Length: 179
Image 1 (cartoon, rainbow, N blue to C red):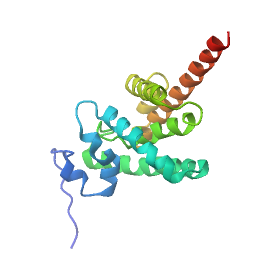
Image 2: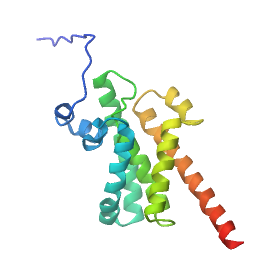
Image 3: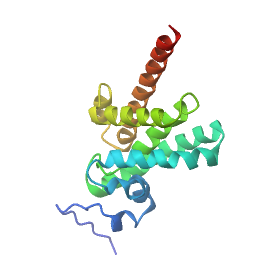
Image 4: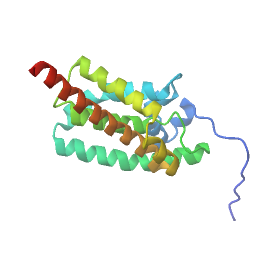
């Protein structure tokens, strides 16, 4: 018997029961943090920060963490695309796995250099600002790649903006303190 596919105008609505039905949905929605309103990206990034501490302690080696982040990025392309296809959108605001991976990249690079409450707050605020404002070329790439790769890429570029900003801040602090 041939399977018939029926296409309708009704779209799937993301809900806790819906994301719990598949692991890729559960991860894409950041264990459910992407369902929190308002500002799901902010809530997702906050959970990513909290998960960083046990994660980095568990993995310990830079090679393991780096490899883990690469795998998370690649899996993020897959699960973001799959969820976007299921929801019928290019980039659903509840998908926060991209924030997780990009923010973990920020923490992976910066934590050995500068850690503590001030720095974690700085990283968090900078990341959210760049992710929300999407300065060039973030917006450009988001528009060019309207798929799982684009979902992941724009946040990684926001992470690069954070890393550059932190480097400038640390450099300026060194100049000010050193004078």
